[in-house]
Image 1 (cartoon, chains in turn brown, yellow):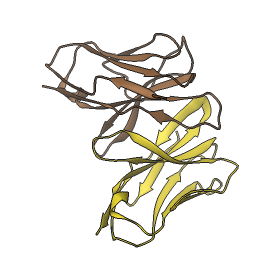
Image 2 (cartoon, chains in turn cyan, green):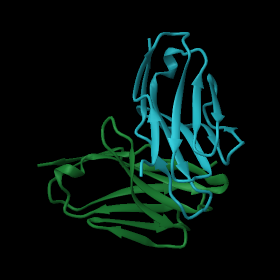
Image 3 (cartoon, chains in turn cyan, orange):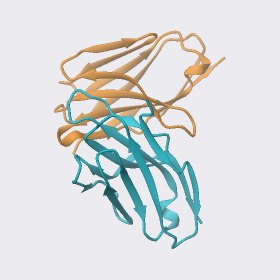
Image 4 (cartoon, chains in turn green, brown):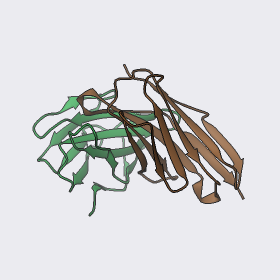
Length: 113
Length: 111
């Protein structure tokens, strides 16, 4: 059982380049999330998808776009990377059931130079 | 807006000591509270999940309590070991299937 899988694990981009972070879960979860984690800032929600076909902005959506491709996959796109987007990005998923927990991927460490 | 706070931000203890990590939240309308462990450069590993109707959960040397009315949770670690050194985060699940995270407590257990 793979859980939540993120690719790539590491990436270096030049300012202005674009890239897509991929996330897939195999737990049949309705909801998926993208967070960024910065020192001293904790986890901040970028976008989330409550269910297939829906996406909503979180706390820090500027500079990002997302696609909920199907129930399994939720991608995060940086159209024009900026140094301020240097961070560790985590994808998470959860069932809609209020009693269930969140499961996290291993993260993508992104550096924008 | 739900706010989750963890105090202290960092904690250093000698091996074998029992310790308590604290988590507080401002809105008691939660579905559950989850404690995570994060090792440097790694993802979040779920340790314990407490439903809003529960008072505590135990797993091995870990015991988590929840007092929803006062907006508090504690994670008790018994007989700490150097391998327990990590950052511990708490998160509450609220309406809209949203999760709100604390900024974590960085724990160092000294051999």
